Image (cartoon, rainbow, N blue to C red):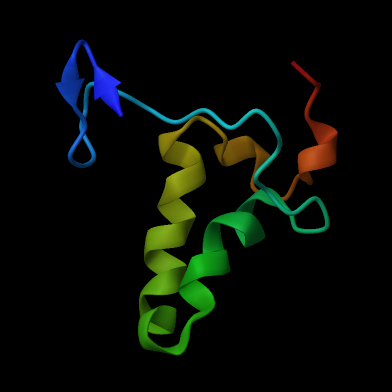
Length: 74
């Protein structure tokens, strides 16, 4: 893949990925979707503290217990 005629060799702060379809599980609330990766045994102890800060960091703190179907489309 090229960006401005330069090969993309890894992640960078100059670009993002925006999914065209929902990438969340609608049967889980916001907090549970955030914690999903931390359910693996070797990172479970880190889950509570780190996962709690993420919704607030992206201005979704008041929606922690909301389900993704609660958000307006578009």
